[in-house]
Image (cartoon, rainbow, N blue to C red; front, side, top):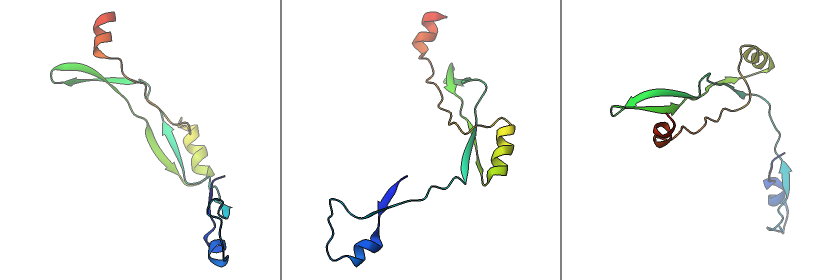
Length: 98
């Protein structure tokens, strides 16, 4: 769990060790939560300055407020794992292996 400085204890105490201040835990809340829908294809082709280039697709995102919404989104194919798009290949590699 994450921690934060307990300001109430610091105000009440006469002396404080600033190297080790009084700490308290921050409660973890499960909701609202983010869900992601990953793309089927990692890249899309677009024309930029007359050249065809590959651009990484991004995931769709949604926020769920409770467990029922989360279960419904997971049933639709959404996931709680974040999508990190792969780096597109360089144009030099496209010419080298094409």
